[in-house]
Length: 82
Length: 460
Image (cartoon, rainbow over all chains, first blue to last red):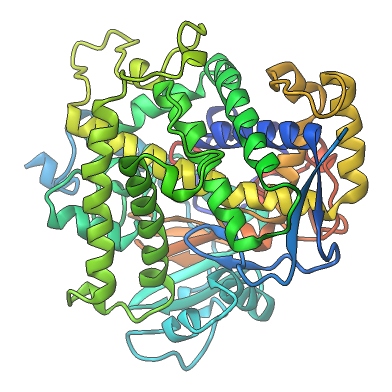
């Protein structure tokens, strides 16, 4: 990732070179990999279907942003190649 | 005396780092700085509580409270919570400024219920709760952060794909067991929690915990209780932080009791799980050429003479933090991945055909490899889903000295919220921000508009 914009001159914060700042942390690397594996494996075997594809995917923030339990739709995993 | 002079914490290296940091960031105040009080924000806030009631009564979640503030007042907003001055920033260049400052060990908001519990039980604060407004032992934080940072080795994460790929196959067994029947969103969470739990234990210990493809009563009791404790910690902490008056700060409320009980259980059960880390390994992970993360956590790779490995208690704490963070983050994000992909029917079919090309006929039990992740650009899809649904809506920072941001003076220890949720939908950085487009990532002009895991040394 490259730095694009310069820091605003109104700031008192002395910026580090972006090359010294890690943009991907250990937890992020693991989480992205786990999710990518899940996505690939799931789609190779299943078609994912929502009962209402146009439903608004609302968030109920908990400590982390989670889907609201009362989203008025259900999800199905339909085997491919069956 | 010197330790006291610099704040009374840390060792000599801490003092040196802090001295260098402060010297390097000595401000040259611009001429036209505006005072803190001129930052826009809600007027007529309640004494002491500030905007707390608005925050905890926002039924759609605290991220919507912040979104509404930015919609009304702009990119930088000032408000008060429990007597503390807070600002929230939602513009990518301001977020970048804060992340790129040369603090050696940045301070951020701690989860107060967690901190209070650990103080009550005389437990270490660990990597997540150390370095906050109130607890600033940099050496102690480094002790826990150093082992976890080993996951930054690119080859290590790639090697773990092999194990997580098996977890992926176990996950599909769970999906086959649903027999294509409709699943409620609330039940999907239990399924993705099981996936997150199995994935992180495969990485840490090379074990399968037997929670995928089984109903709750079939799961081994210690494992089931541990998962329940972790779930309770997050559920009750959320209520304490964002949905009720914080009476738990002063009284042993029902929430505080439930919270502390769940942590007690997590430590007791976690200790048992980690003590048995080397027993009953999954045969698929034995001699697979992959090293359990628990086995390399304590390597003194730089031959530091002052290095000492974590004690068993410290390892348990680290393990519980990794599992808790791993399960909850992965579980929430996985629900968004599945729901979002279900809505993107065209994208889903296009990606499925690509996977068929790479993995063979549909439906076969083929483990995903690192090469498939790259070829199918699966990480780009994950990144776009993180942009649309940033699993951590806000990051936070504190500075021990006055800083100048967006032309305002910001007093020391002002809580700075870095609002990923609003920034990642900013039309100045993302054309048609509500539209799913996995090709945005590589072309993204400013990565700081979508940094749900933060950046710098304190990123997740």
